[in-house]
Image (cartoon, rainbow, N blue to C red; front, top):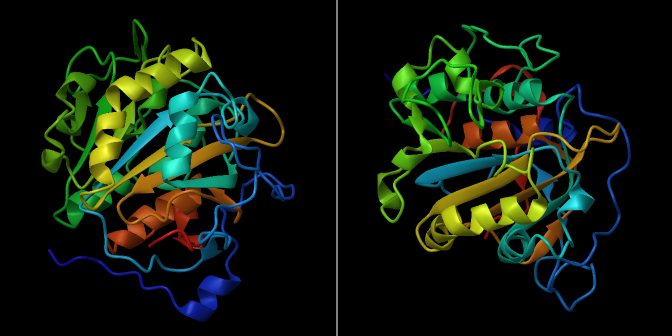
Length: 309
């Protein structure tokens, strides 16, 4: 099957807002706090001071994208914090978005938005659900590319369990879609540590309810990321791969301001990027890399530009 293309016209891209229609209102911050461990001010690093802009990614598609989703913390609860040294070091090595916003509350509809471009009408953390609409996984598979989700604590590969110990299906959107095979839902122990060339085209990593900062501290989540994701991040910066680290929502405030970091070989490092983005913007950018048909709310979001080498 041929890849389906959805090219962006430059004039249309400039007119599009860089977020989906349900993004919360409010101005983007004009400055960012200094990163933890940073001796500079909150100003962008020299050579990478331009804000991110809307438009098609002007860089070749990554061989792999890994999306890691953490839980329920606002931007200022992570960025610039001494109890998140690894996250802040990753921000210095990649692109830190200072105006990144979740689309709603609570958790589950945000995961669905990031994966399918729609909250699918869900307004709570209920389980189970079954959807048939297009999504990132189904679009990749239709394009003869690959997708997998790696969930810590998943009781068995392909499990439809709603809860098991510190595992929660509400954080695992792909298992709710009938057009994504259950085999794409894998235990985190299957993540190819040290053999990252074996990764699928796009994968999601979902830590358990402690390690994602939902039930445990920022320091606990930061330590988990260093132990389990730092090796991939280092590899990605030399092997045409892209790590996306984001949060599902903030601490239940009206602003819903979250941290999002891109790091990889194609990303200009060491700066703050101030264009407003949402989960829909991130999804549209991933879809555009692989010439996938934008799904639902992602179709009205611009792609991320201005951060690429």
